[in-house]
Amino acid sequence: MLTTLRIKNLALVNDLTLELQPGYNVITGETGAGKSILIGALNLVLGGRADRTLIRDGSDHCAVEAVFDVSRLRAPLERFLEENGIEPCDRRLLVLKRAFTTAGANRQFVNGSPTSLNALAALGEWLVDIHGPHDHQSLLHPAVQIAILDAFGALDPLRDSFAALARRRAALKSEKASLIVDENTYAQQLDLLRHQVGEIAAARLRPDEQAQLEREHRLAANAARLLELARNALRQLSDDEISLTVQAGALGRTLQELKRLDPDAVCLLSLHEQAVAFLRELQSDLAHYAERLDDDPARRQALEERLNLILSLRRKYGATVADVIEFGEQARRKLENLEQRDTQLERLNTELGKIDSELERVGGQLSAQRRKIVPKLSKAVARQLADLGFKQCSFDVALDSTSQISNLESQIPTSGFDRAEYQFAPNPGEPPRPLRAIASSGELARVMLALKTVLAAQDAIPVLVFDEVDANIGGETAQAVGDKMRRLGEQRQVLCITHLAPVAACAAAHFVATKETKLLRTVTHIRRLETGERVTELARMLGGQSDAARKHAAALLKEHSAA
Image (cartoon, rainbow, N blue to C red; front, side, top):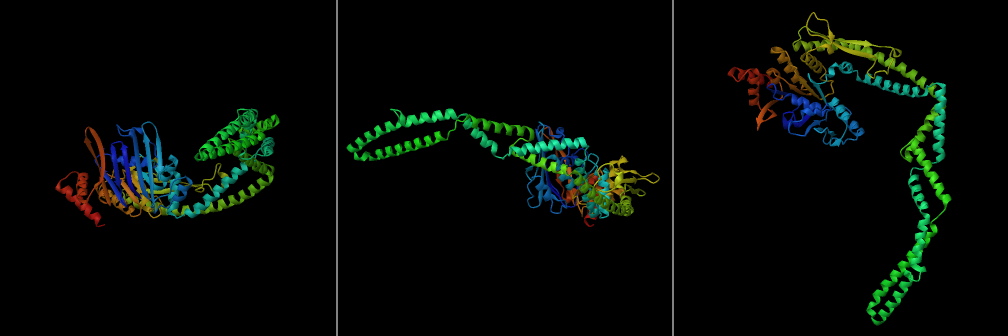
């Protein structure tokens, strides 16, 4: 469930924090007070399009943060977070944050870890289902319609089996396509791969070789100058008449005379002896260093040729030596597959034949089960719609099935051979039309409410948001909408924006949106109402603060608190 929603600098909101409740939450307020800001903020934090014109005037950035309690989430959240390099949840709380600026910067975080917009949107599909005129209507997607049918019939295990087979088939088809080429192309691929494998193998590369070669080449290229400098240093130490060794000897004799006259100067003589020892060590190391220097043009040329070979291979096959080695390994495996093409094709065709047979068997079972479920779902939804004001409506699910794999030109859908089309006729005498052809967002929202009520036990999305479910309804229908919202709230967290008092009175938590103008700036506030405040707000929705309106409001609250 959504526990906390914080909105900063969005439209008329300055800084707002909502602590939402389990069950059925309702948001009311005057037209234009800012109720829709809640929907907009949720869309943003769930990966929707960022419209920078929504950033509050005078601000250069906007941020929305949502905290979800995911202790009852059925989706494989932990695996998703790990695969996307996201920190795990702390105390089963998932924290989503979206921020963007007027300059165009757009950042999103999950549990404090930077992530992609696609990852945020993927999480949103698991967490919240939004239904309203300004949002994507998930119910209109054929994939969602077939998924609802499967959820109602508890067909997910059979569907999952079909999906696994379809994915395996797609992988085998891809592998087969890489082997099926004409003979000229086949010969060209063989020649190219053999050349690549042979060239890389002949080089006998080591991952750390280039750095070592560059060090050796640098020494070889400067060997003559290095030898000259080392010999000069040796002459300065011992060979010249004014060398350091000669001067050190003279200095030692002077210090001996000093010690003879002043025994306390013995420490100076000791330091001199240490200095002479260091000079001798330096002379020895310099001599060894000079001996190791190899001013051999042939050696330098060999190093240059090896480095040129490595650079040439890198230009062809990879940015680093390790990449070249990996390229060679992949080319070797491709070559082995191509050289055994006939054997591989026979294996793939045999496995594809088995999978196609199994797909037709499982897909046939899935289609048969769906056809059995359709009448039950249609009747259950029609009953719910009758309670919502569609007294004589009809609801049906048209299944279009392709039973033969050979009839599918493209990749097999993981959902099976069937395509579902929900059909709805809100008024008697009208032919059923596809749900996507319905113009009224209020009608569509009530169809979704009916479906969500039917599927409450199976649906995995924990938060449902409804906007304009009360469009063009009133009286008993409004009462029924509110009651269904309350019952749905027993299974899921429900957020509903409404203008009808009977719908609002059923809520476990009631929030009101208001506008306030201070210092020529308008600010939207949304806060939770206490019981007495709810009576006042419901009376406003009923037409005013008359005694009759307040009594009616109090009666509505009392009726639903006792329910």
